[in-house]
Image 1 (cartoon, rainbow, N blue to C red):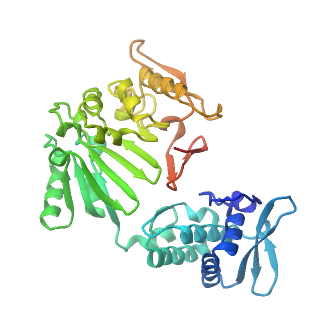
Image 2: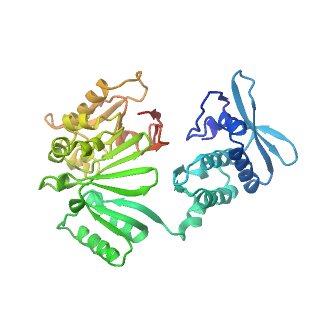
Image 3: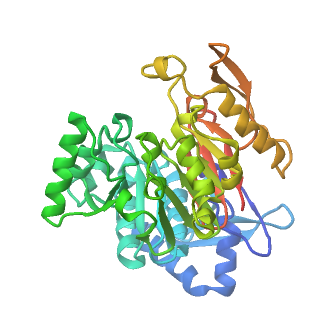
Length: 418
């Protein structure tokens, strides 16, 4: 975040705050001219949590048509962003995102301790408390800071919605811990009874919590299509092929989730395979099929060749696809061998034919298993195809207008618009 804050920002008609802190000078300049209430709120935040500062200012940069962030101390001295501590810059960025957020919004903050001195962590904690109390927002914080973890350890740990797509071990392995550790509002599964000790223990906990009115339980098979209350601005729609046609394969009984936020949308298909995809494409009513069309598709069944059929990909019409799978020949993937070469080629062909942009630096070679050839092969991937063994964790941040994508291993930062 800090490099983006230090940089000057170009003056544009309708600037937007970047999740990395970019454009803050021009957005703050806009606030001061047309929305002084927001500007005053920022100054109040800063003075309350950083008593050594008096004002956050914006001044023209030496470069034509650009602006620069400045701060003024209580002793009157002024410094531009290049001479201000990382912690102060990060605080200003977080505060502006909080002030801009609408009530009910969800803010995702990734490792704030990376740019804040340990003695300043309390400052971040106080800001988070104010955001939640005064703005009615929710905050998701990814952190490795013992101080932050200790600060929130004894506070209620709440999850609004938890979905177990189907009862295979790789999808419910830690679900009992989740239900026993967090205060869960709504718990969704596919409604299937399953013959495993893991599922039996989980179901016992689930039934006890339902009996004690601790959670609301939604069984996919019985519910079928349903809208779930999640956040005021986020739509969650359950799509359950098993509720439309009898399917015997547990993977095909997966609960599929369509999520929308503003103009952005996502589809999570669990391990749904070819038969479930056929039901969604051919048996769903037009109104339900419309929920399949999204910007981001999480590929079914870890990129296996049992899923991701061409008619289904066409029905979803994705701009971006994420394949979550194990590493080549590591752990259980020595047996399952995901993703499959044919599946990756299906997505490559789709993205190649529907790529409206210029060539990107993102593409690279990734490993996929060629089942007919009985060997692993590297395949060139198209822009918009993300694979966790190569990319690591893939983080997607939506502001309702576009999706910003960041990857752990490759360090990519890409923006995707509807």
